[in-house]
Image 1 (tube, rainbow, N blue to C red):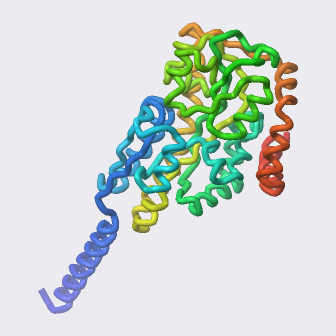
Image 2: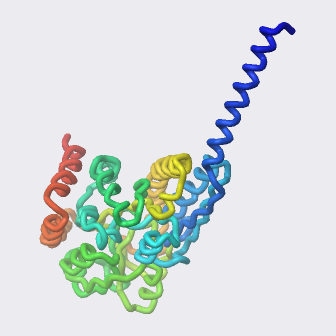
Image 3: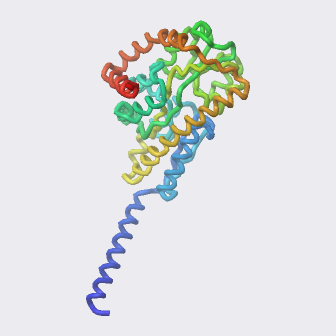
Length: 340
């Protein structure tokens, strides 16, 4: 072998070593970590399925170095507790209803306005557009990082007292609502006795008749077996609940650029899966609830207009609190989708 060939071979070997070294350096930026991810629902609920998809993607892209341990079934507490735990850094992740963020970031109330969205197409345009991005960008100042938008979905009213076919049927019902002022004001305006309560306490409250009803997507009514203690379901679709996938900023700030990319990419991909899955499961859940004996009532369009009119003062109140600029942008994005 002549000198030219030897030099070429040496250069080639040196290049290979440099590449291997670089690869090793990149790999060194991914440390062995365990992420505690809290889910307040069952692991088979779309919240849990989304969490599992995220965990699988993170494991896959980190070479199993970053492990996501899921604590399902509300074992670490309700959503308000989860927010506090993430801000404090004792829990790394959770997907929490946007309504639970209203207390710390008032602008999130815009997403809770009753009858805001008509369908999922409008939802996706807003959540994946500039309004959704703008809201997530407000989170780091409060100790949280918003990675993507999962969803809880469109909410419907259930109760154990009577079928709700018209506005008057709601009068006096004790209805568990989420722990936020928009939900409380909405159901107070509709004539119910709104009772804010953490979700993990709901089943026993319904069973013991401490409250008559609640409002959630079909998936939650089925997976949490609320049909065992609720007879009547009315298709109100009175609000849609987005589910920001959140991470503790304390934890996020300690990650390398490589680790952040793995987590962000996994979150983005898992969000597409979670929303699609949630919508498919929701339709199946409605059929399962009917089969389980729930009486499902479709409210006539004219009656729905009466109900919508009743909550317009709530829309006006929170639109003013949130700020005209954001609300105008939000409704503008929706109108773009509604135009023929």
